[in-house]
Image (cartoon, rainbow, N blue to C red; front, side, top):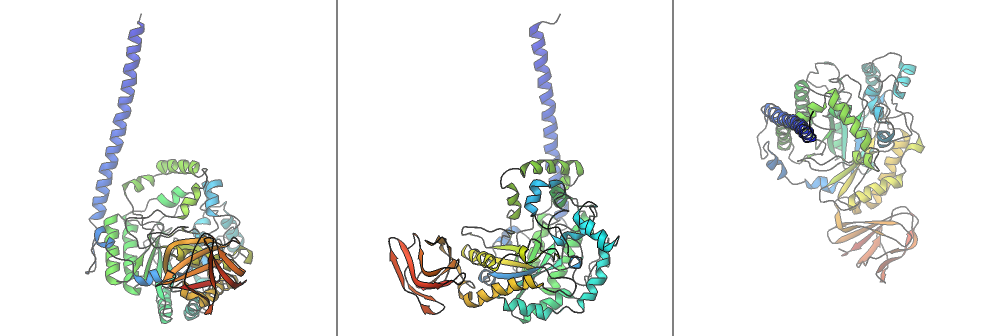
Length: 531
């Protein structure tokens, strides 16, 4: 008969043996990841090569020494254009946001989201609203069949008209989708897509728009979906795990490198705006960025260049991706967790941050740019109406608040069809922002943040501040009438509104602008020598 002491001893031995085995497994897994990470990075890094010579080399230290070009810091307003084959059907369900779907419908958030530009993916899910719409209107037609209608519409597209509208709106630059996640290249690329060899424009849409935009004195930028290309990954993307971690092989990595090099050489884009992530490791990316800076010395890159790695390849495997999705499904039940998706994490090198439909409410040390649509979709969505579009005051707020916090506004338009019609509701918003900018350009373009970005009036209106030289500009984000009293702030200097003198008085720590406002939205007050 086993004594109690012997039983306890055997139990302790089994426990030690169990934890010993667990430790061995953990060590083995860690070792696999360490070795796998090193080998993957080494193999990918061996392919890093530059095609240019110049002041920048393919290492992080070289890239980080580069200052932000002044033209970009001066420019507070730009226009983004999501335009492609998805502009033909122009459909997505509306009534919710992607962030809300992550909380309530995580399992198919990517096929039920309000982004019409995701049509090519959403139509693959037979239960999605997009698939239902597609069956009703196009039967079993393939997504690529939209090429014919898109090309027919191009006969009526006028890039000079676009450029003139953007100029009139006060935009300093334009960023257009050269290749979205649907994989359709909007220029006659010479880089062969092995899965869709002819899936590109025959007409040089990028070249024509670049010429038109630059003729108006604006900067020209290209958007490239580096992290996602559904021609290389035909599986339906339903979850965040699918979107971020479906595996892309060496073939796509080289394709993306070659296409971006081609865009750089052909169009010398002033802005290289990548989206989602980047399919290579960091060495190949830094070589590409150095080539870009050597080719376009005043160019800028955004922050959506999170590089690939061994761990990302592992997460691309179904069991691990399933585990990731289970964790994220729980995480997004936490308060405000889904909102974090709107602001990408910063990467080792970028020239500016890109919060989406979001902003920073304090002065940032690094320049940033809010990118947002006028409605809930970036691509044209026929379901959206005037009621779904942001009001002009909301867009003015985003512009002025961005400038006050060391940022800018990139406002997206979704033109319809190949003809590229900017729908009336969106055009009216663009014109509204332009009208305000024509009157108040001095308070935006070329300005920098003040020592503080905001204050409040006794009427409850928010006031934001910018500076240029010794001048301080106060923008009242409301429709004030008569006197304006700014609480808990003492200002001094000669004050004007649209060139007319405005008496300024200080009492009890507050500043009052006497009889200054006539009810116009977002009046601007210039305080000379107010800095």
